[in-house]
Image (cartoon, rainbow, N blue to C red; front, top):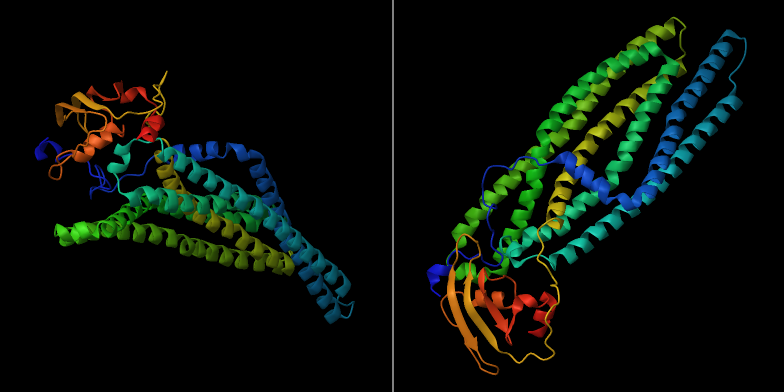
Length: 451
């Protein structure tokens, strides 16, 4: 077997095809990944329903609080006006009762928040555990060619970084989406009960935030996907270089490795910078929109209060509701970023779980109670790529007890022969036999245990 024949064979731990420095990969199927996540969570439907119920209850109690607090302010201002006019005094008992009710409402809301957070954390950790377990089992069923076309670090990144990103995003996003949505609906209802006019003025500002958020979301997803991808690349490159430090030195590859690392790191830096920049724009944008709402409420509320349409306490409550109305929009904007990052990470994990597997068992498998050790290669043809055969009509006979040395220069095919014998790869044609039985008639585990 000549060196030329094996010069294109994949190397263990190599970067493989499609992992060089090419154009930034476009975002993949976001909706499809979300559907896969929902399907993957199928066994936790009931706990998720409880999370939704507790999150909604927490929101209800928190939304009612400002309304009650506004009543306390109205009671105070009315009593102060009566005291100044000499017609009455401040009803501190009523104010105290309203403040206690407000405290109780916020306390109950906090309890519901704690319970739903505790349940959701348990669901997230169980899903992450399941993912790691399935990947661990999946790896044992995957063909060797998968690992020889990717770096170790890239595979490990999917098990560690991507699953951690998925878990963090899932834990925060579901409860945040429920809470923020319920808060927006509840706050809108409470604002309408105070003043439909001020509510309308507040809502006019809303389309501005929707347009700005839509722009940010449109441009950020591809950078989150690239960030996760190249984080795996750079982890793999660092692990590979440190593990093969002596090889790098022996072949004088230091400058080439540094150049490769710099290019990969530049793409990671660029995508991380842009994704974090777009993510960081959310809060300033929403703060600007929120300030516009405050100005509009202050002007319109002051006018209505002067005309006796609403009280000072109602203005105070409404300002709190404006804040509570814009805050969920900010939170949803942040959650959208988390969901994008989570989807990008989950997509990479699902890609691994959906990779092609090699069959582990065969029908009517051969059994050898005691392997004698006769090995034969009969007219073996093999290529790592089917369209490029690199072993042509190789024949070899090894008798039981015979010692055979496999020698040759790097790339001659020494390791390839062992891989074929152990069925890490199967021959394209011909046969490899152990004690006269084709290795393809054994279950893979039985064959390898025999060795």
